[in-house]
Image (cartoon, rainbow, N blue to C red; front, side, top):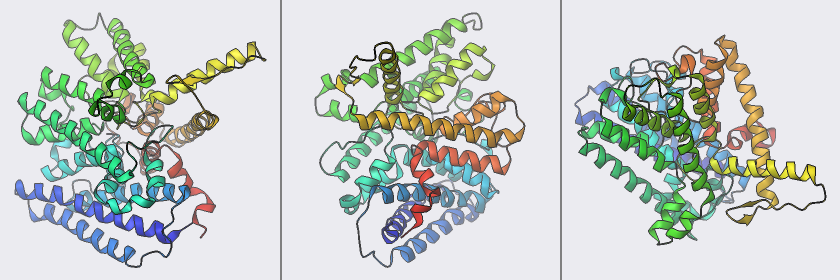
Length: 481
């Protein structure tokens, strides 16, 4: 383990967070908040600058980074970002508990949207801004953002990016990694700006439009009003956010293909086809199930589309209490929580590509049992899958299920009903936001104990980082020099 390089890169990343904290500090000046709020962001900014300077003062002798060290850097960076990012809430008193602040900020950076806040409207503008701004930063990836603005990291960053990028495979858009990160962020921010403009055209004020766009882009879903998007009572805004969430759940590499004129390649994407098919099928089945529950057909379709889009992209915005829907509809949404969006998107979950590949491997195994001598080639995007991808997908599912069961056991100590306990873990490890039962869209995670909050914070970080970067921190080999 090249501990010196891990220390150096992590220190540089903490300085990036110091810069990010200047944005909510600016908001506190714009809204003329008390110095108590200004100091909460300024003090943490100064702390991170000093800490970053101390840790990066001595440059490492070897700048070599292996895949193992890349995983450690990613895991440590996300944990430290969440810890220090939560300190302003503790200092200004908006979230006095350090555990609650860590939970809330972990939820923000991992774009989960799960919250311990009972009355979000009590927060100051600067706190609301920072809370939603973490979605924008974490959506495309903290390390991807750092690489986009710190191109000098490029030479040794491929293992870092591979550890942070969601999905079963990793690929660069162009030969230079920093250029790939910059292209992705330009597309990401441009799409976010489009959502802001569309919400402004619908009558939403600039502050609200920005924060909802942050949540939509990062597929995070932190609301700034009690009741999420519903209090605005704007069908137009609900359609904008609904389609926006769906768009950010698509692999961003496909948007790059559109920009360079390779539109035909986009329509050949098997993952995109399944993603849209699953969304359409879920909306249709839930609408049929709710046909007698709504007096207005248009309202029903809008509520169902918004909920399906929010859940499959793991955003967490809500316009309806889907916890009160029939059990059939709730079970469809619960399945969508596990599916998640596309690989290479800002959405969480297992990813559609993994679900499709695993389904094909499952069918191939059934055929192989019936015809042992038959040679079966499993293809994805009309290309044969290599053994490494097959093993990676299968192993991921095994690790995922074992970790999920372990987390459910810990949260079950709370004594809640099965639906609440199961969906609390499902909502956090898949970076959804609200679950079902007592952690549904009309409730929060406030009633959970500190043990469960720390456990679910770990679940959110593990889910966002595809499990292994967080799990590797607990192996003895990791800390051997």
